[in-house]
Length: 276
Image 1 (tube, rainbow, N blue to C red):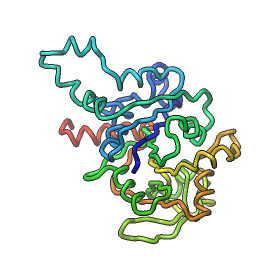
Image 2: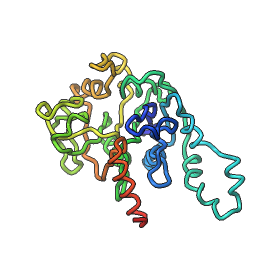
Image 3: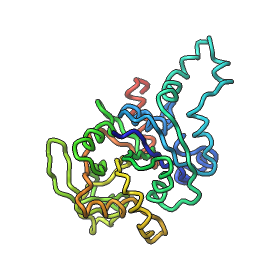
Image 4: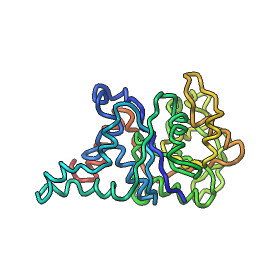
């Protein structure tokens, strides 16, 4: 069973400067809840109880958020505002939070490898908090856990994107083998190809379930042009062995790593709550 979820959260969030000069981008709120909390709640709903968070300098507020705040709790105790802390307290009580620092920003693959001491030798999930997903029923990670339980190999979430946006994503090629599950056996994947070089318009989003041998593969993966270790390159090694499945998830994704995606997410969730 999948019991641990890794959250790479060491990036600088430069597209949100100056807001992210002192506030981690993962702590930017959609309405009243930080992006990272949405991801943690999705993992808890999938039956995961250990959150492994890869942080960096200036990210202490992440640890503070997922911890008791005795002074604040004392001030609100017995008042009409006490219920505002109920949701985050439930999250804190439902999971264990562990942390490690990524000292250099050398790509998503490097961030995942940095988290190895928190994961150990077991399969695990990865959530990128930038990709906020909203589902009418089971969350994306819950859907992926079901797929993993069936096939016992690495699972990546995908969605169809406009062809002119392939240079923003990892893109897969694969063979549909279960149309009831919308699952593809991955045969190839390319990191941010230009539209003319992209094999399909099926893009990898920020949800993964990885088998533990990914760590050894990452250790032997050469950095790309920008000196970064890409998880796409490591997954391609598994894919060549027939051990990566792409799953077209059911739900809606918001790219909250961009300002326009962040605004769209805010408007969507405000509408869901009857604010707009």
